[in-house]
Length: 113
Length: 111
Image 1: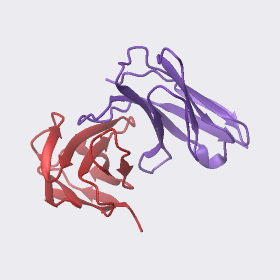
Image 2: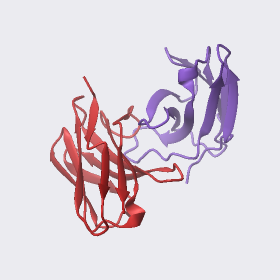
Image 3: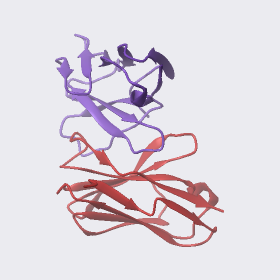
């Protein structure tokens, strides 16, 4: 069984559109994360949710909004997509905080045209 | 910014040990050293972590110097599937912060 899953795997869309990426973990973890990996392969934290509460927001534009309907899901909604949003987005989860092993999803490659 | 320094790339022959160095000269007493790797087009994968003592698991060994200013990740018998970018990360114990990924070391295992 997949521990951390993301949908879709690929997402191609036009500038200005609104899109969502879904993430689910079946590990029973309390904390979930969203990371962005740009074209230069730098992997950066965007958000962290612990028990449905946001605990980190690393100066991400407010066009990005994480939504956690329950502890097992952390979805990423992006409004008014821009060319610079093109990247691979990874979801991850850990039992508690960052010093617990993080399990990453397979990634969603977003291309904004 | 990442608090670690790693060589940008390394090569290793298949079946040989791969030794990946990491400098973390400003590490604090309560900071752990974590290693993750990212195989091409996949999400990062946890490998191992340690504080002071050397650690070993089914994937690798972690050797931390006595002054804790550097460490080495050892893959004892590298295979082609170990080709990946390896990230060394330091983070305080019990941190609610985040993993800060640097540029890592691109390890190429060659037949």
